Image 1 (cartoon, rainbow, N blue to C red):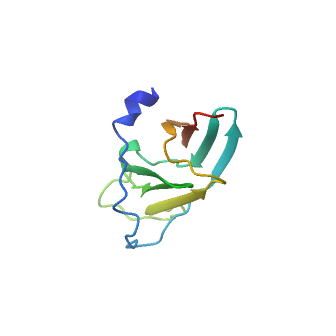
Image 2 (cartoon, rainbow, N blue to C red; image 1 turned 45 degrees about the vertical axis):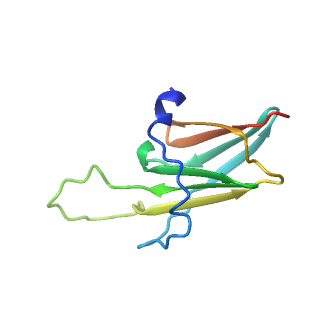
Length: 121
């Protein structure tokens, strides 16, 4: 399933220096050291796979994209809004370079799960 999602992800560095047009959303993330590298879990409920960008540079993993409200009927007015629909960014720094890692990713129950496999473990 992860391979099927790969085609929806964009690996772009061009938006990294861009200024957000609205409120920037900062999703929560967990980072785990595992035998063959790293596992990163990012809370991205409601984000479509095609709206996510991932970039590795040096010891930094950069994740960005946009959560869009695709389910609200047009012409309606809101009564209460607590979910942030806007651009998000998450920058994670690792203790050593992660360039050249084998990167796999998938969405599972509202989480983006990224595996960074190193040749050394």
